[in-house]
Amino acid sequence: MKSENSQLKILASAPAAKIITQELNRRRFLSFAAAAGGAAFLAACSSPDAILKNGLEGSLSMYSWGDYDAPEVLTGFTKKLGPKLTVDSFGSNEEMISKLTEAKGTSGYDIVVPTGPFIPQMVQNKLLTKLDHSLIPNIKYMDPAFLGRDWDPNNDYSICKAWGTTGFVYDKTVIKRELLTWNDFFDAAENEASGSVSVLDDPGEITGMYYWAHGIDWNTTKKEDIDAAEDYLVNTFAKHVASFNSNPGSDAVVQSLQSLIQIWNGDARLGISESDDPDKWQWVLGSPATELWMDNWAIAEGAPHPKSAHAFINYVLEPANSLKELDYIGYHTGGTGIEEKAKEEGLEMLDLVFFTPEQLATMKTAEINEAQARTVDIWNKMKAAAGA
Image (cartoon, rainbow, N blue to C red):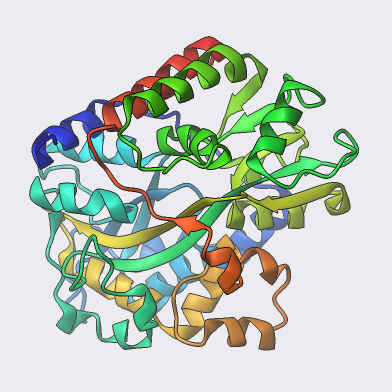
């Protein structure tokens, strides 16, 4: 078993996934502009280096997944509390960890959004700072089911931002048969959808598909399992893949760039809802098994604006803002009773947000273990074989 520090080095050494530059379509652009109130995130109301009357610093910097917050929540924070907010995006946990590791506490970022299993190694290697719960009283609105996870039992360093799962969508005008499982996904990729396949630009997701399809523990460390995954993914599957994209709902689904797309549930909801022909897309929850992931609010070590960072986390946990976040990103944000509130508000496509107990039973959480180096290596080899 590798040490915590050596595991982190593996993660930080992974080549940065390409950051997806997202082009807002007209509806999203208009909603963003309306939320911004034409005031460029209300930047004029605060100076970046100022201490505001409420004691908060005048600015706040967030490093998160692309297009992962409701614009009206971001602008509402600035309008209500004052700090000017800037957001940069990453495409994978490895990319985020690499940047924080290289910066050694001088990244300039305040809030970061790691996925749960990466948190222990980040804490061990002093990439995160401990939360002051006295500054986050709105944690009381969180459903206890989404607190106290194995990676941070006391929520000392993290609080659930959103959780979801992995599946795929396919274009029914191209793939005319019903697809139900990961094995169906691979079969279609090698046949009707060959050359028109998109997969998530994430090492664990790519190897995960193979393990889930073949009834293998996603967290396997057995050499024979990993060798089999590499052989198939690199030597057979890769040649059918056209794109490695961590945000396909923003472009690939909307623009019909590919016909078979591995995708996270909330991103699928976004893409289908904004497609000109939503009826042609079919969402499939990965079967017979898939993942349950949770992204988390956290504060980076050396954060230059810690008070504003705590204030933002507290603000976004307010029930009304939590529901706005859910509607925009399409992921469960962990608030108590939020499913009932979403139904009362008439939010659409909630079957892609909330899952039955039977579906939840098929979802497993990732571990960061000694297989991580091979997982990253397979990812790189598969991209090379696909010509990406």
